[in-house]
Length: 388
Image (cartoon, rainbow, N blue to C red; front, side):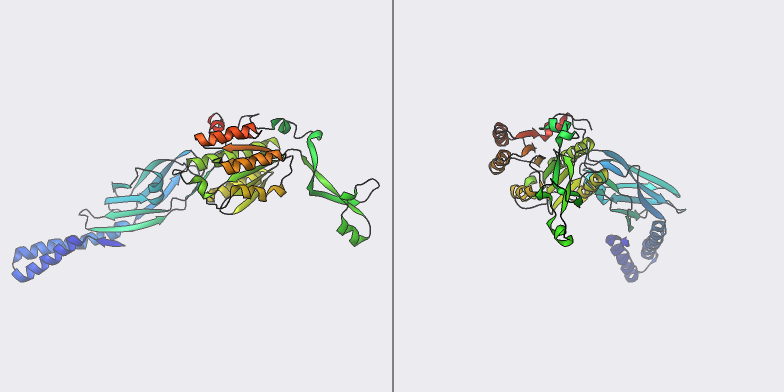
């Protein structure tokens, strides 16, 4: 789309009217000069803009929160005519870089310019660098051609995985012995196989529906699992991050959650994560593929959930073995959830609270939880000394 400067067009029309009224060589010479600028300008801008090409270039396409990457906007002029004025703006860079408002430059004939920007990604997500707008103009600035290029280059920014130091978790001795025979129990939710009844088998194992169908008794063999299973509850509700203007709190909480699950995966401990977000989600993290699937989910899901976090936890307790490990990741502790966490501890659950806030009120509630035997850890302190 070609735009023309209105003031120049008005001056040209006025010059024509003046020449018609007054006559004479000078008024017409002025008009013809202005008209020539219009005529040559529109041809110049149209021709040069057709030969302008722009694209995004970067070396790495998968990064972690906090990483920096050099992203270049490549602008090429494939014509035999230099471009007097080129202005380039990328909408994604405007959002990421505070002082970025675009670049303006002269582009020589048959040449390429790389506009390099060092971008630090502070939030997880998929950065496709959207639309790059390229404006070209003639030497007088009368005509302007605007072209928009949709970029195909994208960068995925995943949560950062910290290498959490060993033995900081409550119940770590159980985790140390997770693979020993003494630590393994039957999981009554996992049926390994079904066989015929043998003398001495418990009637609790009988598969009554199958037995009735075949006329003989069949019993269920249950799979053995570690006595300690990690169950992580992640608070991703909108109200928990009202004052998190730059998203730092949310990103650190997500970083810690994936770091804890990664640690458990490395230890061979099965994990489940329950997310109180815009949609209630549950992920089983037993393999690297499942862990990667969870990381992909986090790319496009932010803390936009509603509802009560404590009610969400209670609604999922039926899926949790009392001997299993429970990690609760939440920004703040308040009087309501403090009492609920103490109640869970009294019922025999191994509760571990990971919190972000350092306010005086929260620290008082933390002291009360610790006195009740609930293990509490500051996410900021844990990540501060953890290698990345």
